[in-house]
Picture 1 (cartoon, rainbow, N blue to C red):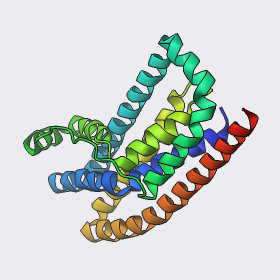
Picture 2 (picture 1 turned 180 degrees about the vertical axis):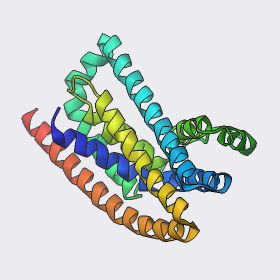
Picture 3 (picture 1 turned 30 degrees about the horizontal axis):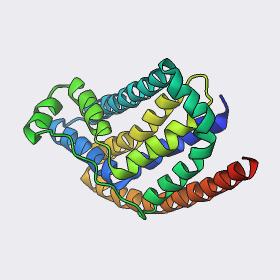
Picture 4 (picture 1 turned 90 degrees about the horizontal axis):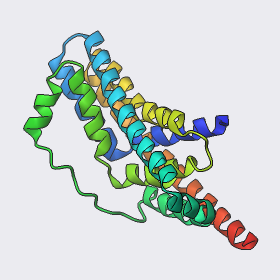
Length: 226
């Protein structure tokens, strides 16, 4: 598997982690942990378990899709035949989501605040489950990146599980950074949040524009060769 595939998976995960919706939930998780635990080492460990939860979710979801495709010859044959033709439009649509030209309201998970608080209070394991829960709470941007860019990245790969791990690590990397900031103090968290928010807009516009250009190029070349 090429280095570019790993770098792309990592970049897509970073983009998910700094997108407004996931970023807000990540900060909420770290802030809650910081209030509950006073020592910096404990906050870092909780942040690590939260990240492991996100990795587990994306690894399990990716495994589900890979196994489903491989176990259904009809689906596998369809993707092998038509995937080159649909990947271009998929990338264009994903880019439009990133540029906020398109928007879809995803149903929220029916989770009560009390349940989340009770889960979070369980040492370490609670943070692990919070990571799973928040990773499963797709918003338009994170869903567009995962389903529209990450899954197409796995096409033709013998195994996409290492890429899923890299993707999951990247989605939780910002959490670990915020956990370090939380250990240093609330002012550090506030400053880091402002910097991350400004970076998010630039990276989202850059990635969205790149995906649209790449999608148009792939669509034209596919039609031309067809």
